[in-house]
Length: 253
Image (cartoon, rainbow, N blue to C red; front, side):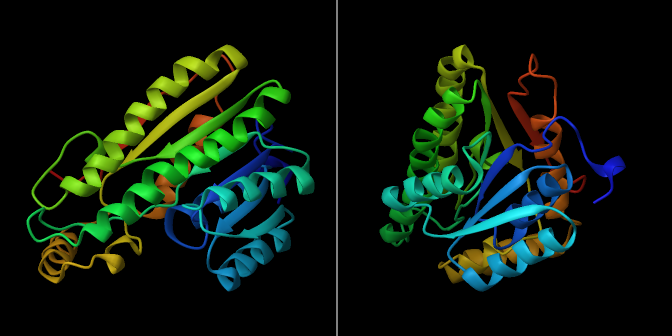
């Protein structure tokens, strides 16, 4: 990576990215590494993480892999411990891992709700809880929580998913007011429709078909668009806390 392409604002900082094996997480890890951060890659798919770490290293960056389920509290803590043991601590945490299991409430498989709450909300909270002591010890840090436009509004088939993302918004705002006293910033990123693997996991087939048809009629955002928003937020002067970034495709109503 050339010096010209490196943002001095996060050069040498340690960034942990959950859900880094694809989509927004992968793009964000690459963008943070390009900006000079040492990146800790977390997801469950080891081969993808190792391949991504190889790409970062080949480009002159630093990366390490922690394979684990972000929804598991012990593994979330292990991820932060790994970051500390490998790179000395955590400066940036990007809570990106998530599931979007859309479907009507009446026909819901309630296990879908539990899976989303455990990952989208509790997993984010576990990782945050584990990372704060390291950030405080280092004199500051930045927590970036990837939410959704569904964290601002709800629609038919999004009730369960929206519940988790509204939770992310509430948690993030309360957290922001607490940790600012320790030099820690909190940013919520709220993407609209992004071209990722999120739709692959929808279990309600009618909803999945309808949603994919909707996406096919628009030009969705790319993961790199969200990664750019993350980099923007974390590279602002320390006096600036970008609280929220809502970003939709031009085609999305």
